[in-house]
Length: 323
Image 1 (cartoon, helix red, strand yellow):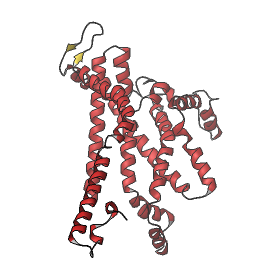
Image 2: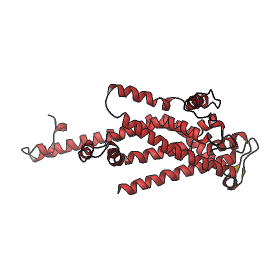
Image 3: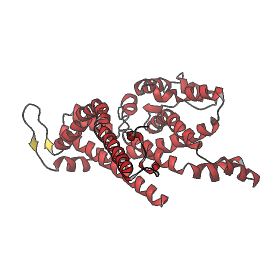
């Protein structure tokens, strides 16, 4: 064994000169290893650089531009004019924005609650290690990976308002009259909500399945011995064990609901009679259809602030409960 490999503490019988040389050699080797590790600190950033550049160009720079535009009257080819908070006042005082904000909250709340409830039910049904369960889980997860445009077109066909439409045909089998679904102001919001739940529940199911692996099985056995029914075991054992999962999914589902756009745009485009107008579709119309880019940017900034506040509040509540 060379002096570079020697442990100074393992030389009790050696003389003072030998021990000193061993410590010096070990210290030099440690410094060389530290220098080699410190010299490679940039390696992870080298691999992250392409993704960071894409994020910078396609996300962060547009965000800063939108924030700047929200304080300006945007005049393409003529130069922008600074108007301060006038765009924000226009948005907040608009009846259309208030209605769209309320529709967004209702849609987000309904989709969040529905997708989490259905996702938990699916997770409880598909929990286990069976070979067939893997196939069933994959099949159930398909709505998440299917493009949202395809999902919207599929449901638009199923929501055909005539009596021979797919869903209306099923309603006719149980003696119910045909419904207008997305063509009726009274049912259009619920119809879009069902579409969002159908697409979001499988994603929540997979998160719940991952969380169920961390629930102590001994608690189930103890509850069963105490005479608890299956529903009681779910309520008193499973739900408390998934508290952190519920918090994460609530944030993800709420953000997904607040930013809903594609399914509303493709199914109803905010109609009929504005009954499904949400903030994102209103921003799109203000910015790109009416060419009021400054007002649209102000609405986008307000939506971002609302999402940020919701995320921070839920995070603070989680930290408070964990203490």
